[in-house]
Image (tube, rainbow, N blue to C red; front, side, top):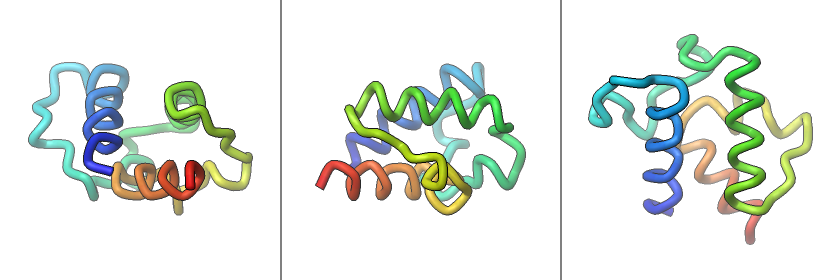
Amino acid sequence: MDNIKEELRQHILEEFLPGEKPSNLKDDTPLRTSGILDSVATLKLVTFVEEHYGIEVEAHEAGVENFDSIDGIASFVKSKKA
């Protein structure tokens, strides 16, 4: 799961937080509730997750409960691949 977290961190930093230090983006940093990701950015992240991990994210699964932190996204990906 650590590999998933690092891939997510790298993607989020490159796409949505260019120039930010990786150490500032923790596994539990709120992404949506803090405003780092807006609705369009969340859609882009969902698309990345679907394509990169070969899973399908249903509309109801793309909410804050699964997509508000690297921890949450990684757990979600792991559960979908199981």
